[in-house]
Image 1 (cartoon, helix red, strand yellow):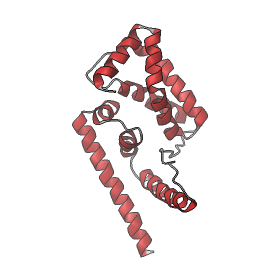
Image 2 (cartoon, one colour; image 1 turned 120 degrees about the vertical axis):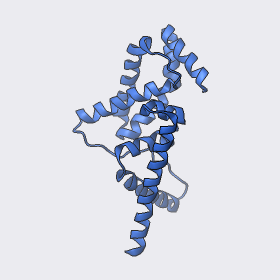
Image 3 (tube, rainbow, N blue to C red; image 1 turned 180 degrees about the vertical axis):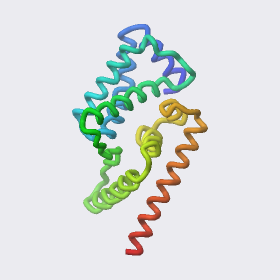
Image 4 (cartoon, rainbow, N blue to C red; image 1 turned 45 degrees about the horizontal axis):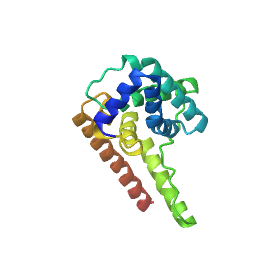
Length: 183
């Protein structure tokens, strides 16, 4: 969906409950997937997604177009709701990051699981800010403008943050490979 279509959808959502239903239909799966990757629980992700759209329904009339992708508003709400979830549930984070893709065959499954485990381990060594920008760009598949809007920075700053986070991730992964070879 391009920016103009997205803006039109949000304007319809502001005008009527049927328009809000279209907004819900268009973005529920993405918001649910974001929440699931953050909390690792179907039930909690469903609750978070429901709360996001409840908050959005309450705030849609106040939503102002700021030439940023409107979907970023939903992701900011989701991010706050995920944080609320962890505050309420002992604050322990799970690193459920969307790395659950399965391949064909048992050997490929084992190899894929090892790769996902290495990536999870490397991501865990990054700062929360680095993990978030990588998640938004690669697991949530947000474009540069959307990542910038969620992070509250310019598009250029978002690209710089992502570049630096990927450089740090590469360094962690490289050092793990070197440690394995040495050991």
